[in-house]
Length: 193
Image 1 (cartoon, helix red, strand yellow):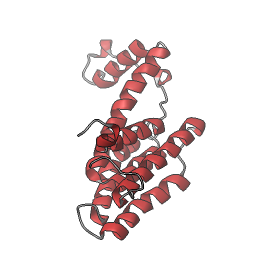
Image 2 (cartoon, one colour):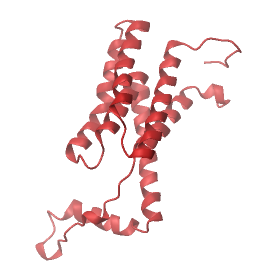
Image 3 (cartoon, one colour):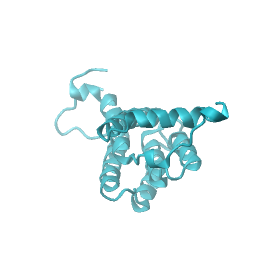
């Protein structure tokens, strides 16, 4: 992609990417304010990806309906598995927002956005734990969560639920989505990709 001339139209694909960034931005703001990502945001975004892709590109696997549906499935799978494992961990709104971003971005860019989101959330979690002075206790908690089953009984330790820290994932979904889309259009930033 070259530099955009003034008055040049946005393509359908770029419009879908913009919708993904804006949708995750609203989700991030709502998550920060209330601790939830509402269905009135995620369900229309989930439906918009396949509907727009079908309208613009047909059923094709490159950018059409199949690509959008594959993006929803791939980007929703890992967050859904995490939600099923521990519903108090990742919420259903986070799962739906990841899936909706995948439906709007397609499988490749959607997984890239999800990867950036997880990296940002990991760094954010470390910063939050360090800020609360719980980082080392959390690492000890993680060790015992991981190895209690194989340790001799005298070395086992009960893992405290008090050391669990809630992390709002919505802002990180926005950061990852925005980063993936910006890197996709790095020529607009003068970075050339």
